[in-house]
Image 1: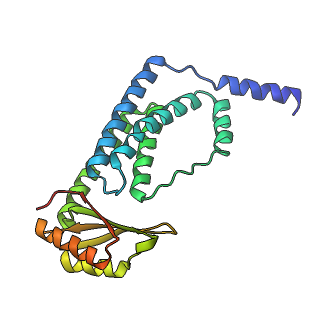
Image 2: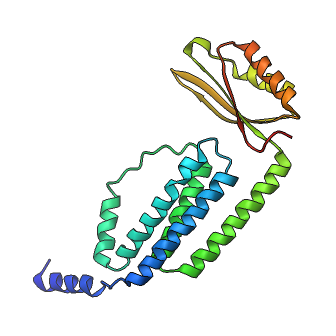
Image 3: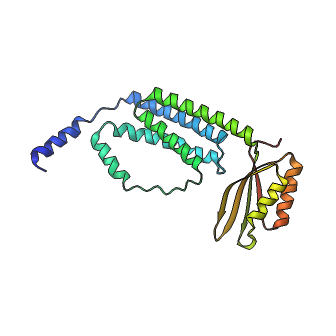
Length: 229
């Protein structure tokens, strides 16, 4: 590149740099932490993921604040923006996202960081409030329709693998409602997760006994979802 053009390009990069208002940055950073905390509580309360939602939700605060920091710094300089593109081209994220819901909440946390990093507080607050309201309304509507109140996990090792069809048939016979949510099979373990509904504790106990009769080596665990009715 000729010296004149090189100098002009350097001046352009320098001219596009801007000073960051420290007070605005602190306010946005605190707001990002608050919104991310609220989002983590919403996910723990209204999420339907079978993973540990509280543990996963704790990541939202760090992700949101980090995203906000990156966007705030990058938007102040074109040179940093170009550098970020190059840096991201060599980054590979290999964390397993087992359920689409986890990815949706992760994108929401990142979006909050992006909005506050761009100093769009009102839009970010309004959008977050509307999205949270939709999550709550949808969750209550779905739960009234499905009325499934327990997570059931059935698993076994190599020595006692089970027939998924038999397990489903047994659950359909003893449960008021059954929905298969996850099925994992590999060389070491076979595991199936369900959302199920019981009328009372006796029905739950009958289901447990019936599953154990299929295979005594089965590991059976029930996780409270809404509480027995």
